[in-house]
Image 1 (cartoon, helix red, strand yellow):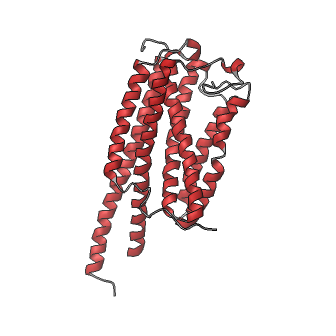
Image 2 (cartoon, one colour; image 1 turned 180 degrees about the horizontal axis):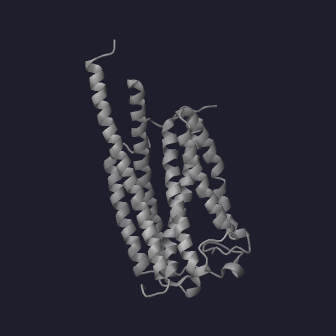
Image 3 (tube, one colour; image 1 turned 30 degrees about the horizontal axis):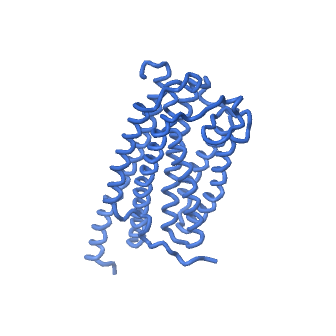
Length: 55
Length: 248
């Protein structure tokens, strides 16, 4: 199978398929982590806001 | 007339991450099974169909299925948004547009990798199906750019919905184009073809069926995992924006 003259194209395509899907899944994971960090930062800011209300 | 929204605020947002994770694990298992069938069971094609490169077909067709399906669901969500004004539908539309861009890119790249050994070119502007597919990819990239350029959520959702309803017109056009244009070289595997002389006679052997069916199911489950994750992420991001606005 891998000795075929067209095998590099087939391998390249499956690298593209699996790599593309993995890349998108990782991008979702990283964006979810960034959102979680942002939420924690907002929790702190809201707590500060509640402790020292604006006049 | 506007309909009363029937979509709860948390619907379609993947509020059950445990279920999304299970769907993700199932998707990985199904993709692995599809790979075993593609490389272990499906037969090698004749040289005129690309030889070993023809194995690209299984995931190429599945990427197209997922990309075009996500386009149709993006338009459906846009239509539902216009009827209900529920931003949950807009988040679902955004998730589908992003998935469309990813899977159309995979479809186009894999098509080029099959075209090089089979047609001797990476790309040809003479083949209408390729041109329409590239146009669809660029349209959905534009959709994402358009969204990022509009700040007001209601206006963004409304304009995106109209855009998606116009862009989806190309889906049946893409499907039919190789079936009605006689000199197109893109193979027509399913249904009657008028381009047999230009593209050659192609068919699907019985041993190819399991690999193709499992690939289609695997990509459908991948879609479910991705759309739930992306919609949930957008709901989380919208919530963050609302909290930021309240703090200012």
